[in-house]
Image (cartoon, rainbow, N blue to C red; front, side, top):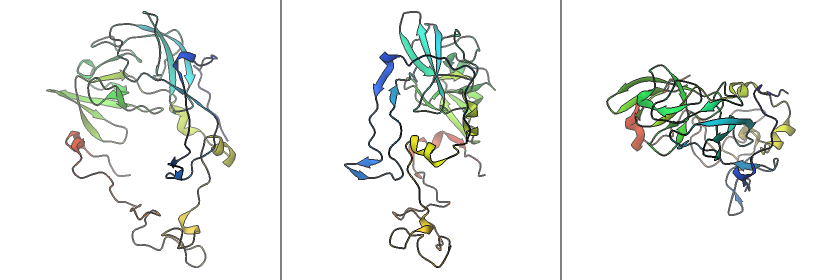
Length: 261
């Protein structure tokens, strides 16, 4: 088992005004299990995170860096000059006392937020808008970062960690720097009980079941799936089948597909 404790974490209780009740249904819809392997887990409060950061031109000071139980990235409590407090996604290197600002054009400093058209090519960015004014929708998990490849006419080209190159309108906002807590992937859970604290129930292999319970079930001894095209208990292809819709409206914005590993 291993635990990662980031250096910049502040010993402070969460901001009460930015907490919400977080009730769980444990993978159930109308009382019936619709998502397996969910249930139990520690009680949590939901943190209201500001993905838009739409206080244009108003600088704010980072009061604390906190761990959010609902996401892999760290969050920062920012106290703006007009007195308002908001949680934002913490960028790598962000610490208590640092000043950040959202503006159409501002200084190139990790944590600052600006329009793609004004960001230098080759900069690592995160929490990127896909539609102007909607707020950051992509590159939000711990350690994530995309590279701004080019700005051409009305569109900016962004290279994701997966290798996919995508076009986004240059009027969209993005945060400079990669998302904090890049060591998140190095954590070893260590024991089944810790997974239960996180709200995950035991998972049983399909091949260990009977044919009545799973398409992979049955057979003598430790036999495999035994199917040409392995599928889920509900008959959906589960190996190598593309699940993206062929006529998805956002397909036109994908310049290069992600590379197969």
